[in-house]
Image (tube, rainbow, N blue to C red):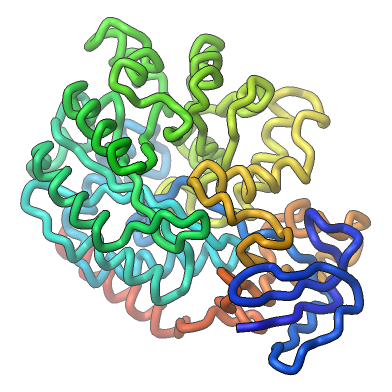
Length: 451
């Protein structure tokens, strides 16, 4: 498993070098005109720029087969939850889940991602392990790093999606017992882990009571697992926290032991100065999902104010039912542009800092300290974007061409832990025509079930 990548046009984090040597899954050397060893496979990266693999810190892979549902195209979050994900997911079979996960991971790989944190919430009182196992299997088959954020709902509460669904929520005992089996089977502690488990109640405000949340937080910390959930995606979170618990949403999170350097939340769009200060003080992070927040009209997370306060900003594509592209380069491109417009200041987001949101910051947030940078000793998660194409021909900032121009990009080669997952523009271990046929077949069956 030794490779020598030669002749890149530029390498992020190492602008004076053109070559990268990979040994035993690790970046062993950076330099110019490196000479190949007898056991090395040569990769000619002429016309390519090298980025660290992007780290997606919030996804819903099951939604890869729920794109553009007509009933939810113009809905805000609350109505969309009823008309789209919670309408369909109880009918998703293990086979369809496998192909949905494979499709979502395929899209991530094609965009330059090498790690996916999937907030997987397809659990209920009568559920079995097959749905979850399908996600792990899809990641194994494609060779991508997977952090499974194990969702849970122990109360119908004020969660409109659950209130509209006939399924029975899990009990707290069920959640912990099932999660414990997953932890024993899949979780790895290494800073370069290929598999991680995260404790991730589906909605902090709406889907569990405080006693359950505190029990889940205690379980996570007992086993050194990280914690994740949705918070302040819409104003309704704040309203419900005030009405039900007599405190702000961020204080409620603290009340339930869900703040700290081992916690991150998706969205945080409606964070005010008080919430930002509390997040910064506790070291809590954010998965910023601008495409989904735009699509649902939720607003724009104050990511620049958060970054200035010292909060670790990362990027997530969210589910493809509310962010149809499922692309990390799209997410990075939009994040770079959106905050310049929102702040009326072109200096608030630089291209290199946005790329770090999408790579290094995400890796550190997930506890993958050996991932996310092209440096000697780090995991060889490396993406080679082919910019030797007409649409990039006029770009003077060569290194940043993929992020500046956004989709469509062309990933010529991609490595995860030193193993090729894309070679010569082809995703390995995947038949695109077969995947397309399986997804079409599965979606047709799903529509028959739901209609």
